[in-house]
Length: 328
Ligand code: ADP
Image 1 (spheres, rainbow, N blue to C red):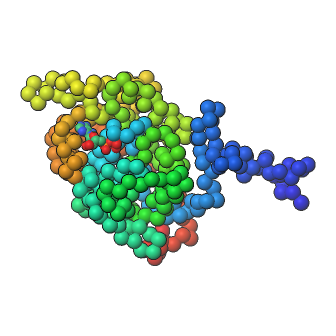
Image 2 (cartoon, protein in one colour):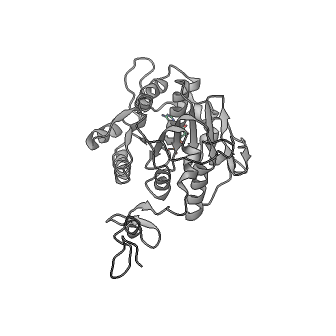
Image 3 (tube, rainbow, N blue to C red):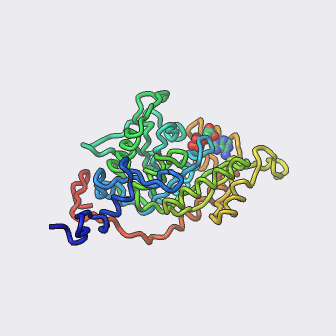
């Protein structure tokens, strides 16, 4: 006999929630919008949500740092935002899932770190007793190794990172997402259903305007709240007279944020000290307090510190913590 929600004549379950869910996706398990862009993956079945809840369920806030393309300072912002929050007394984790250019180990001088594991569980590494850090870079044999990812292996490594890491209890997890608005950031945002929001990083040039627009549209399509836009590599101030020095321009990100009705978090100036700090593995918020970039970060961090605890707790009933041994 057909299920009570099934069509009486053909027995199909297209009227049921499950049927509608299935209908949304094509045979390749992707849902697309009218322009053919992938807007959702069908991860149901492949993923036990409770496994994600075990790893991520004791993290109060998750913030994803994204950009439309590489090289705009996304990792710099992710590292320094995570450290700023930690220095403000919060328990913070930093997850680097930029699959093609995991630069967090370099920026924190943690190259060569080996993450410990217990069974299937990966233990996050420690940075100066301030941050818990997980990076794909820790898993590469040599720092110069390049990884050639095929689509499915990308998705499975992202799943593993989100499912198998032991973070413990954290106030914040800052996620350095892969650049772009394609499959990889989409997967991250879908696998973590309770992300608080995105910080979008851009540069100030004219081309940035199109980038911010794309990132904002991406977030809106997947219903991801936008915490705000950071304009990185903005014109610096002259150290002598304090006047703005014309370099890469200024204001592109801010203008577009205003045009699109999303918050603007602030500008980080183009500063050789920021570049050096990345190369030397000494993040500037930690190493150079008082710099213009440091002050910019104290502002950028404020709305993240004010995120509200309005989310429902994940359903962890009966799920045992494989590391601690007790109930989560
Ligand atoms: P992405 O993650 O977007 O690829 P990164 O954060 O790795 O970008 O930054 C790319 C390079 O630019 C790095 O060498 C970094 O140190 C440098 N950089 C980032 N922001 C600034 C800045 N405000 N001033 C100077 N150099 C910067």
